[in-house]
Length: 135
Image (cartoon, rainbow, N blue to C red; front, side, top):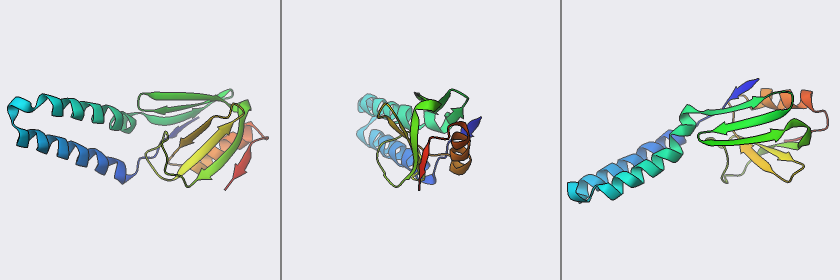
């Protein structure tokens, strides 16, 4: 089963503001000095735009696969120990602050944001009865 990732409006605002600042600064600096600004624009867009196009979590019988832009993380379902609702704003595979944390036996924690976090949690709890769900 595939769950679509959630992207909040602030993600789009950040993309627009950073692109606007970079484009405005490059115009102000002049055509002869535009190359460094184009490189900055490409680097910023390579991080922020791919998650808009590819942001999903796939759950099958053996694993949970998180795809967030160019990033990919796979966790075996049998190794997942805890699922918790996160209030942290730290770095994660998420473009929303409504996050779910998935902890595994390997001491790995992955934070994700989905359009339907509840359905995702229910699906994992059906597959592995040993998972603890912490609100």
